[in-house]
Length: 146
Image (cartoon, rainbow, N blue to C red; front, top):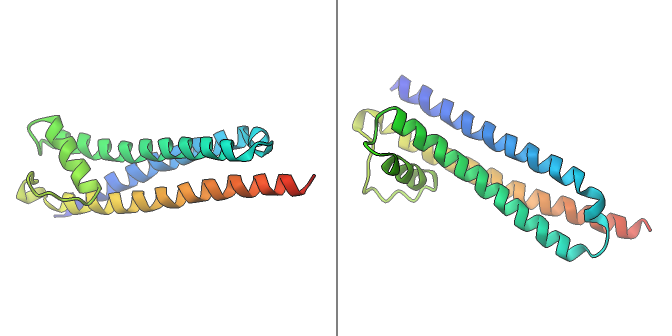
């Protein structure tokens, strides 16, 4: 049980760390594009930011799923990588079909993967809203400062 808790906690931390790196890259990209983003026209640029942020969020969530899938496969919990990836995605999204299960002595990892998915999806939703709010606020402030 303690090994599962250690492995699950480590994978959660690794997934959050990868997401944090993704956030850092997005933050640096927005800083570089600041001058362009605050110039008119604003709405098409906001759409570009939305598209880019969604792609970044999908990448971060996908990276988390792959981290878990690789761990499941390295631990020998599934015979094929496709099974590990499928289980990881189903657990991470908390869909939980139940058609593919972890071995009984590793089943706690399924709950850890689901917890990680909830955490990451919540963080990514907040990140997406914050990016849009920040860009739009800067656009409006630039309009009023002229």
